[in-house]
Length: 345
Image (cartoon, rainbow, N blue to C red; front, side):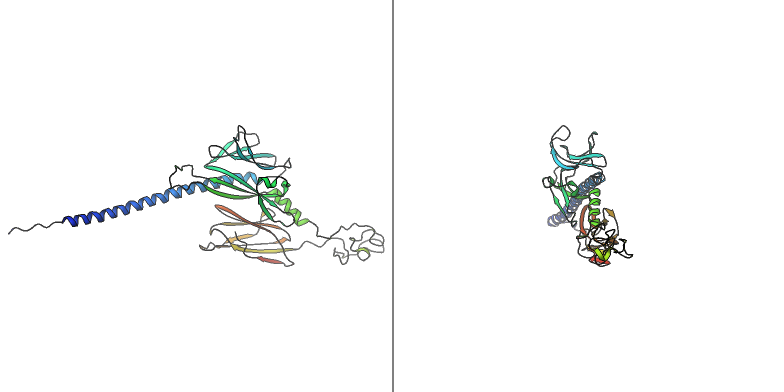
């Protein structure tokens, strides 16, 4: 008896082919998505690297702006059209005996020149540059940002910071949707010399209503009466010499003014990135200690230091790709330590 040979029917074959096709399509789609993610990450990495290098190179030179400047107009951002600049917006800054210039040329390169040296291309993939000037108020330490037209009538000593915004793109971008296209990234640069001068003016300014200790005629013989508030009380009536212990208090008309109050400070708030590095500067110099919680959600930071003089200008900086700053003038309010919360970065 002949055995019957079994096999696959046409329907079974078609179902098998369909299942195989679906599996192949799934694998291909996964490979395409993986490639898209790889290209996008490489594009964003190129943009971020160009931004980091650009800001680092500019920061080294521009933080000295205003130091030993020979001109009262030592900082500008204006449009220039000549053989070097070709109708570009040029950031020009003088500091420590040298003038540097930055601009973006027609080849999307950030160009640098020091004094009259040959211009050098630093970084490519830069589509444009804009600058805002941080203008401070010496009376209270507040800061507001203006464009180039807003600083025309202002004393440049009151420009304490620069906020530079660069429009960047991936130099390898061929128009594909996988690339990130143009992105704007900004960074803030503190100008050390104007800041230090401003802080010195804020912390050493005499208190309202104070007077010197050389007003003759207020005591009986007018030799040294410790200030016109002291008069007959602070100045000695027997020969004009000051009594021991006169300490400048208006009540007793002493010689030297009371010392400026000081206090330690603790600052806390949220931070924009869990890996952001936090730095605190007082009078333009790094001071105190700061830490980042490193939490995945709602990361926070805390800084502490002191004792600092009342009125000290404190700047907080958080950096992780972008740079975020916050600033304020210290108010001890008669306490030996103060706590400041919700100073977010």
